[in-house]
Amino acid sequence: MLTIDGTYGEGGGQIIRTTLTLASILNQSFSLKNIRGKRKTPGLAAQHLTAVQASAMICDAKVTGDTLGSTQLTFSPQSSPQAGLYGFDVAQARAGGSAGATSLVLQTILLPLIYAAAPSEVTIRGGTHVAWSPSFHYLRDVYLPMVAQLDIQATLTLAAWGWYPAGEGEIRLEVPHRKAQPSFSSHELLWESRGSLQVVSGLAIASSLPAHIAQRMQNRATKLLDQADIPNTIEPRRVRSVSPGAGLFLVAKYEHCRAGFCILGKKGKTSEQVAEEAVQKFLTFHQKSKAVLDEHLTDQLILPMALSGRSGVFYAEKLSSHTLTNLWVVEQFLGPVARVNKKNNSIEFFQRAA
Image (cartoon, rainbow, N blue to C red; front, side):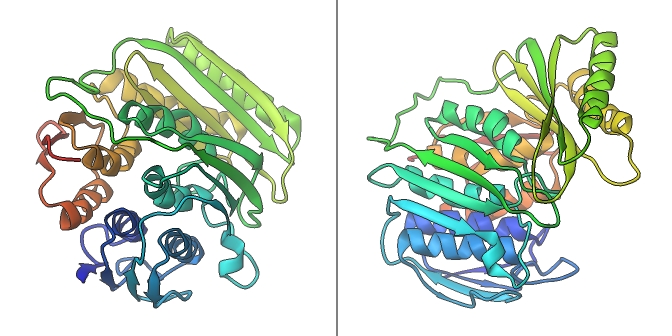
């Protein structure tokens, strides 16, 4: 049984999710200690517990320590990932409900289901646009188009918006059957450069809030992007949800890659400030960095890239502690998969058997 220390590096929830994904795919038992040991409130929170339960269901795992707040976990898969019709609700993991991130549960189980022998459909309820996690729109418009280049195909739809504190959003995932592991030649280059910028598309959302909030975000963002000579198309939209929420979601579509930039609204922050922060995040990436991958995408692509077995270099906007910790977890299962160069913020992946 592999033993993983949850206090390593960044010491947060990513260690749990990556460990669960790899254990499910590789049929590898593990013991995880000191779960989220560097967080103010250590142990399994609602979204982490839901990810554990979802992974256990997919590979029929025997589990101990799968309780809210647990700092120790053992996980022993009894089968390879099984396709099926699944439903998970983060709110059921904690009395009084939870707006825990549906996106983080999804990213834990997506790759195992890719390896299953038949198609799967998954419904996940909880938070769809919450802090400290990729939003639904980031997953659909940035993450999935990027992993599609690694032959990871999936369709994601939004059935209900879920904001903090109530959550009660719903996303639906469809994973087709992949008949064979793809074969990549050693000379193929992936994400060597981002290429020319095609357009910045965006969605300004006012959820159970006045429509002028979305319109003001759109107006300000469009003005700033126009001033910078950036082609753009931003849609203001008013939607309904249990808890009110607002945000601006920008997607930069380049010739070879995509990058995403999101700012959520909150009390005391004007619509114009939300737009300014989101646009500034994009402009910093676009004008002041030669990176191909935004900071968060770098972290999220490590696992699918390592599993693909192909070589390539990630030129990252930033090599965060989160990213380096995630790479460490992957290498506990797979051995050395990449070389890190902190001088130019790059990760070079070795070609290896997938």
